[in-house]
Image (cartoon, rainbow, N blue to C red):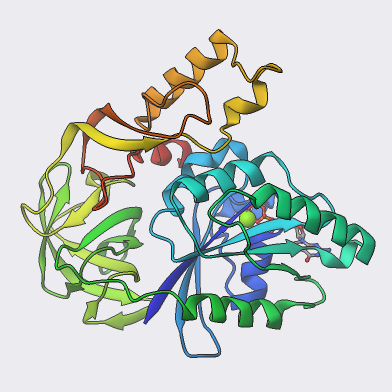
Length: 354
Ligand SMILES: Nc1nc2c(ncn2[C@@H]2O[C@H](COP(=O)(O)OP(=O)(O)OP(=O)(O)O)[C@@H](O)[C@H]2O)c(=O)[nH]1
Ligand SMILES: [Mg+2]
């Protein structure tokens, strides 16, 4: 059984270094990422836990400018590693990423205090208190907090064991026979052609299957499949998948497209879905003492949300909770997920990544 685990956390808090230390795979693959020493787009790695469980890891960027890329990677996770540098503690994107994890209802997670080699025990216990307060009321409330150092290796075996234990309680993903592969990467491999990657949900895909790209409706055939760099004939729900496709060029695909069985998913530009505001959205940081948000900020937030096609109509106060709202996407979207919950426009992520 295969699981997908994602990172989350503020810039430079040691997410990619941690993943490299755990897996031996550097998730920062772009030359610009190596040059700037920061993650820009999603990175991927994989490992086998002591129990034999396979995990695919999605490493996200912490920089506020690449939040859309983070959002694209946070979809379909079985568990999250909320990474917080021990020397800095909780920072703005720690909270923002936590809000996203909470809104996506990722309920399994570990809080990883990295760079433990840079602080003493007293400081570490202060950071633990801060972290416990930060996750209170979120889907990660009560998650184990582990201190590690990717430099000295302290705490890494304990982290691996804790992750293994966390996933032991993770139920097998049901195969509903409606496979959907939200594309998070598209590239060309010489001699093979177009390859897409993503986390498969709700079904299985096999070599030779005919699939359809949504939106657009183009029919494609799966020429080859890989899971964690291994060639396979079939992949099941919850797997990180690389699919080699016949019948489509790289330029015709974009992050946010979905690969599904023909005619199983219809694009829509209006969706009515339950919407929930973050427990404390970015906007809440700018409220006055009575908790009111200045009008110009509220308008800007609404416009930005509308532009991104996500939660455009979220109610004003960040604490207002759930409600069902009609939302209009700027282009026809492949619809919402099975539980009718997630709405977002991932095409924008591609723009910010390029
Ligand atoms: N001393 C020490 N330094 C660390 C540790 N982990 C990471 N670093 C350093 O922290 C810096 C940032 O690490 P990254 O892994 O790039 O941080 P990141 O969270 O992936 O950053 P973004 O992807 O840009 O959000 C690098 O210079 C690392 O060498 C650690 O455990 N101890
Ligand atoms: Mg990184």
